[in-house]
Every structure is written in C-alpha cells, then in structure tokens.
Image (cartoon, rainbow, N blue to C red):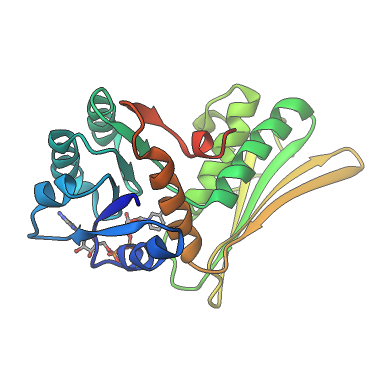
Length: 242
Ligand code: NAD
C-alpha cells in the first residue's frame, strides 16, 4: 500500500487528509508540523502532501528532494518566488501544485475552458460565488481559478479580462471581459457558478462544495496518482486524465 506523509499534519486539512487516507486504501506514513523532522517523514513516505504555510515550502521541498519522494503542494498563497522553487524541485522529483484539489472543481475548470474557447466573445462570462460569513477574501481563489480557465479558453490573460467592480461604472459591459459576484452568508462551504450568457440563452456551469473533505479526497487521489511518477511538474488535470 502507498504510504502518504503529511506536512502540516496538525492543521484542519492535515487532519481531514489523515482521515481520508485509509478510506482510499492507502497507509498513513505519519505527519510533520512546526518543529518536527521533515526529512525523516520524507524518507518514510512514498509520496508527501503539504498543506501548511508558504514559509515552510522551501524546507518541505528540500526534504522531498533529498529523499527522492514525490510531493503534492496544496498550500495556497504562493508567489512567483515559490513557483520558481517548485519548478526547480520538479527537475528532480514529481510535483503537483494545486490551489484547489477538489476533483469536481478541476473538472469544472476544464469544462469552462472548453466552453469559453468554443463559444466565442459574444458569450459573456460571469463568475458567481458564495461562501460562509467568516470568509475574508473576495473573490475566492477558486473563482479566480475558474475565471483563469475561461481566460485560457479565450487565449488571454486574466488581468486583461477581469472586472472586479462595476459600482462606479456608467458604461455597458465591455465585450470579452469576465465579471465577478461574491456573496457571503451563513455556513456555505463554497458554491461556484460560471455563467456564459449569449443572445437569448444562457449556460450555467456550477459546483457546490459540501465540506472540506472534498479537498482531502482529491488530494489523496492525486497523491496516489503521483506516487512513483518520474520527475516533472504535473497538474490536477493530469490526475483527471483531461
Ligand atoms: P491550518 O492553519 O489549520 O493548518 C496549517 C498547519 O500547518 C498548522 O498545523 C501549522 O502549524 C502548520 N505549519 C505552519 N507552518 C509550518 C511549518 N513551517 N512546518 C510545518 N508545519 C507548519 O490551515 P488549513 O486550513 O489546514 O490549510 C492549510 C493550507 O492549505 C493553507 O494554505 C490553505 O489555504 C490550503 N488549502 C488548500 C486547499 C486545496 O484544495 N489545495 C484546500 C483547503 C486549504
């Protein structure tokens, strides 16, 4: 059985992943958190998952490289320098870096990219999301991921197309742009809908997350897929065979 080790094991995602590992037929190799021995965990694992902090990324990648152990990075908030570290490590080990490990969201992103590509600019794209009342950032990282997929489909960059606020605008909608709406309230784990609005018809592609277990399940499935792979940077789309 594949042995999966967890960096950030005392966190919410770490706990959720440890619960899911045996459900999906893998073995929990152990966990490491602040102050623990990352290298020892990397050596005892066939594959690692990291849901900790951007500040820990360097240490975790070094441990994975030294042990030659593939690693899935689920930690968010990575900047360009972190991405460069991931690229560098991917020359020696297999890596997936994914800000959202839900299989459903990654499949939805592929559908959005295809729809945006095939339907052309006269279909307006808007991304609507709703989360619980405690969420502090807007739009959600997943809304941005879905908008990025639409921008990819249109062969454009997201900063070029995104329109986050129309509050002060008195102009009609600019063709080809991607708008956002963020709703906050209650205990909603995460709803996302991408609306493609054409003349006289509308397509709504949506996803509803019921709990954080979906990220844990997707992470474990991706880790099982990654174990034993040769060096390189892979994506959740590769895991889904897209
Ligand atoms: P959390 O705060 O509950 O847990 C983070 C854990 O990492 C803590 O136990 C903390 O002690 C540990 N940690 C911090 N610095 C560390 C270090 N230097 N070495 C080892 N461990 C360290 O947070 P969470 O909700 O479990 O989320 C963790 C990360 O995963 C965040 O970046 C979050 O945004 C991300 N996340 C990603 C997905 C996804 O689908 N990819 C889903 C949910 C959360």
